[in-house]
Image 1: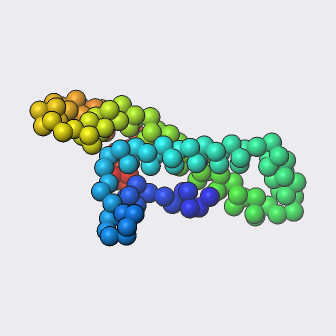
Image 2: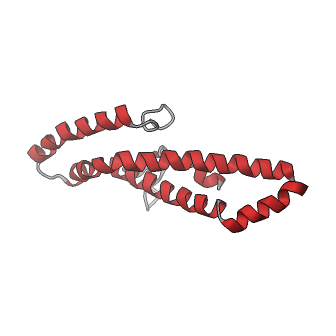
Image 3: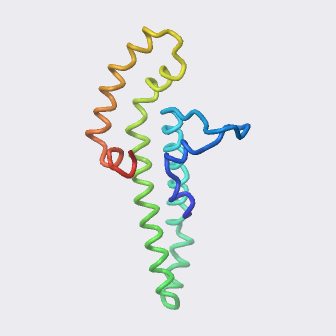
Length: 139
C-alpha cells in the first residue's frame, strides 16, 4: 500500500531505458498513463479496504487492538485522498491525450504547430479547474 501511495510522476524522469544507458525520454503521454495506472491501483485498494469481510474483522479487532485499528483507519484515509487525487488527475488529463499523441507522432511541422493553440487552451483549463493538478506537489 505504501509503495502505491509513494509513487510520483517525477519518477518517470528518473527511469532508465531498457538497455540501462540512461534516462528514458519521458513525454506527456507517460504522465497520463502514470495517473491512469495509479488511479486503477488505488481504486482496487479502496475496494479491498472497504470490503465487508475486512470491515467485520476490524470491528472484532477494535475491542482488543484499538491502536492498530486507528492506524489502519489513517492508512485508509491516505489511500482515499490519493485515490481522489489520481482519479481527478486522470479525468483532467484525458482531454489532453489526443494533443499529446499528436506531439509524440507528428512528422509534419505545420501539423505540430497547429496542435499548440488548442493544447495550451486545454492546459489552461486543467490548471484553473483542477483542485489537485496545479498544486506544487504535482507540478
